[in-house]
Image (cartoon, rainbow, N blue to C red; front, side):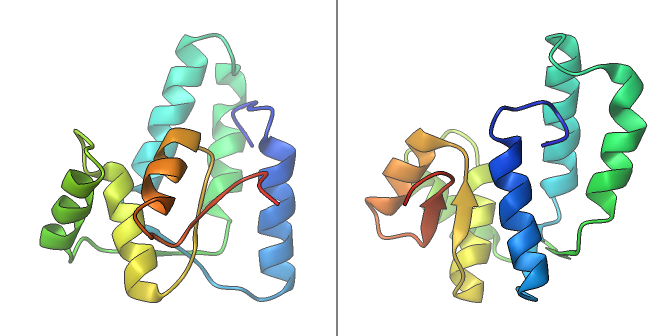
Length: 128
């Protein structure tokens, strides 16, 4: 990953495979804001050099991701509540995956365990 996360190599390998296999990659419109948030947190924590910010954002902007507008507000909130989340951000990704009949890949173990337990189409990076 561009922010220095140790799992970056695995993420890069997955993206490379998906691109080579012509697999469509989708995300809610909020994804770029979450990337900006992650980079901001990494810079503040001195885990990512601010000098690399433009390079990182340019790299991310070139990924072949189809972004989807917010159209499923009721479903997003239903999912967030069913997972006992206090925010709806993660639920937006789950609702989109559900609507596309696709898998959602996550780095977040607690969310994964909670969502998979409720039958959501989610995979955890690094699971076999």
